[in-house]
Length: 411
Length: 149
Image 1 (spheres, rainbow over the protein chains, first blue to last red):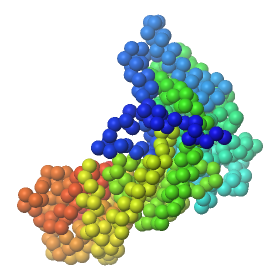
Image 2 (image 1 turned 180 degrees about the vertical axis):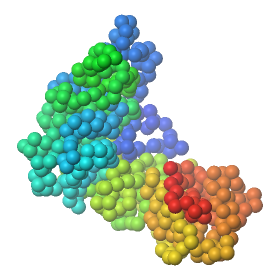
Image 3 (image 1 turned 135 degrees about the vertical axis):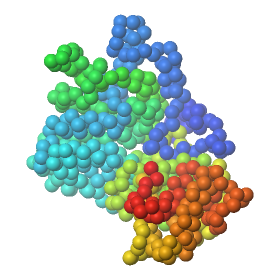
Image 4 (image 1 turned 180 degrees about the horizontal axis):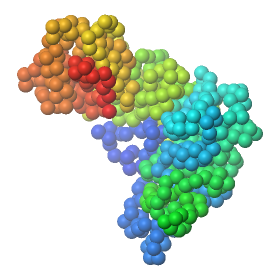
C-alpha cells in the first residue's frame, strides 16, 4: 500500500471544511469528534443550499417539471447510496431519519412478524443503545429474550461463543460493524456466515462502519445494514436501511400515510412496492440529496485512501497516548477503526472534555450511548477521540499536550 | 471562553479528591437521589433534620470533579444550618450559576460556594454544579428522585 501521507492532500481537504477555516473562540478548531457527527464539507452545504434554493418541491407528486426534476435528484441520491454499498438494487435502499430509525423499522416490522414468545434476539456486547433498546421494546411486547454475545477485555467479540448462542430460538442477530466506543472492526462477514448456517438473519449497525470502511453489503451477505448520513459528511435527519429484497417484500409497512400507497379505499389500501412501502409522508429530500453529495465527495477523495490515512493516524495516536502515564486506552482490538476511547487517572471524562474544550479540542466525553460497554469495562464514562480524513498528526500532538495540562490541573 | 483553571481551583480539586461528608447515613429523616442522565452524575443525599436544623448530612455516588466538589462543599455549608437557610442557599446558588446574582455586589450567604461562580461560563457543566443542590431541594421537599433533564 502507498503511504497515506503521500496520497492524501490533507491541507487541501481541510479547505473543504468551513468549520476548520475559521477560528473557534479565538483558536483553531481541532475536531476529534467525527464519530459523534462529522463536519460538513462545503460541496455538501452548497448542494443542499442549491437544491433548496432552486430545485425544491415535493417528490413523487404532480406532473410539474419542477416536481419531476426534484424526484430525479432524489432518486439519483438513492442510486448513489446503492452504488456506495453495492446493493443489488436501489429499491433496497430505504430512506430513514438515521440509523436509529432504520433499526426501529426492522424491529417493528420484521421483528414483530418473526419474534414470538420464548424466542431469542441475539445482540453483541458492544452495541450502541440504538441497537439494544428497539429490541428490548420488542422482546417486552412479545415475551422474547435478549441474549448477549460477550467480548474480551481487548474489546473483541468472543466468536467461540457465537455457535452456542445461536439457538433454535434465535430469530435475529444484531451486531455493530464498528464499535462507536472501542473502535473494534467486527468480522461481520464471518458472523453473518455463521448465523446464516443456522438460518438466523443479521442486522448490521453500520453507523460507524461506512465512515471508515468501504462497505459491500452483497459481499457481506447482510440481511439488513443501517447507517446515518450525518456521520458520513452528510446532513442530519437522513439515514439508510438496506435490506435483502425478499425480506423487505415480506415485511408489513411501518408508518402509514401518503407516498406509500398504490390505492386507498375505505375498505382497503394497497401499498407501494419497496422502497415506497416504508417511506410514508414527505421524505427528507434535501438531506437525501446532501447525502448523495457527501458520498460523491468521499468517493472523490477515495475511500481506500481515507481508510489508509485514518489507519496511519490511529497508529500514531495510539502510540502517543499509550506513552502517557495514567492513561488507559479502552478497546485494544487487533482490527480497529480510528476511534480511541481512554480513561485518565481517576479524572472524570467530563472534566477532561471541559479542559480540552478550552484548547479548542472537541472530543466526546461520556457513556457514548453504550452504557453496557461502560459497565463491561468498569468505567462510568470515557473520553473519546475519533479521527477523520482531515485530521493531522499535529492535532494528535495538541491533544497530548492538552491531556498533560489536565493532569497538571488535577495533580 | 474562560480559563478552566478559574473553575478548577485548588479547593475544588481538593474536595474532589477528598470529599467531605462522603458515605451512607442511616437512619436519616430526609433523602433524595439526584441524576444527571447526560453526564452520568449520580448522587444519593441523606440528611438528619431535627428541630428544623440540618444535624447531619452525607452523600454517596459518582460524578465529575465539579459535581463531587459541589456536593462536598454543599454538605459542609449546610450542616448545622436551619432548613430554611439551606433553601435560601439553594436559591442563591442557582441564581449565581444562572448569572442573576453577582455575589461580589449582592448580599448573599454563599460564602465559599462562590468558588463555583465561573461555572456560568461553562454552560455544559452547569448541571454538574447544580445537581447536589437540586437533590437537596428535593430531599427537603420530601421528593425521592430528581433529574437535571
